[in-house]
Structure formats: C-alpha cells, structure tokens
Image (cartoon, rainbow, N blue to C red):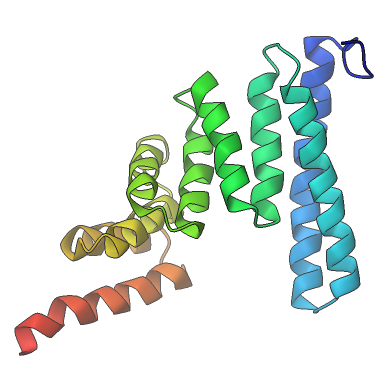
Length: 190
C-alpha cells in the first residue's frame, strides 16, 4: 500500500492529528453557534467538515504505528461532535484497546454510551472516568445518569450530589437531582 499517507513519519502523523483535533474543537464551537442561530446551511457545511476529518483520521488509523491511538481518538471526537454515537464509541474503544488508562477516552465513551442508552456499559465507563477525573462534575453527572437509568436511586443521588458539589451550575445535574429526589421521596409519602 503506497498512498498519500504512507510516507509520513510518526512525528508527521502526530502533528497532523493534533492539528486535526484542535480544528475539531474549533468546528464544534462553529457548529454550536450555527445550531443556536438555526443556520442550517452553515451547520451542514461544518458537519461535513467534521465528518471529513473523522474519515481522514480513520484512514490514518489503518496505517500501523504509534499514531493509531491519536487517530482513533480524533476520529471518535469528530463522530461524537456530529452525533454519530455508536461509531464514536467504537473509536474510543479502539483507543482503550491501545491505552486502557486513557482517561479522556473513558470520559468520551461514557457520553457516547449514554446517548445510545447502553446504561450498564455507561456506568462502567463513567466509573473509570471518575478514577481519572475525580474533581470533574460532568464525570459524576454521567455516572449519576447511568445509575438513575439502572434504577439505583440511592447511588445515583450520591453521585449527582458529588457532581453538583464540583459544578453547582450544571443544569443537567440539577435536573437529575430534582428527579431523583422525587423518586426517593415518593415511596415514603405513600
């Protein structure tokens, strides 16, 4: 196989993939702005750019080398941004096969698994995320959401309270706390 990417060094791959990752963060902001303005034309254009970057990162992943971890992560990031949750999950699982202690991949995977409603797997990924980011509210919020969906209200309450102690302004966790408190109080009120 002798294509346009086979003559790159590991340093070249890493540089290109980091540039692509940084560009994805910028494009995510552009997509959020376009969505907020309900600018479907711009949103579609940005979506296409993100999709193209994910495809390019996938092509880099197919070429053996140390850069595969970063290629899988960049592809997963792009796919997550455009809401291709199952495909993004697959890419983050590829990252974790190569680097089981990659905290960022565990965090991203927990979000993707929540979106696809794979609650048991989401709980596991979120628990791993809390090991790497114990001071991050979103991680605890992901865990609380998975526990709520699994019917484990007491554990979910504990996790969401931790999330809100770390990030009191998190509206998702605030809403989850309200729902959980209603569930927790309801049986005693009867």
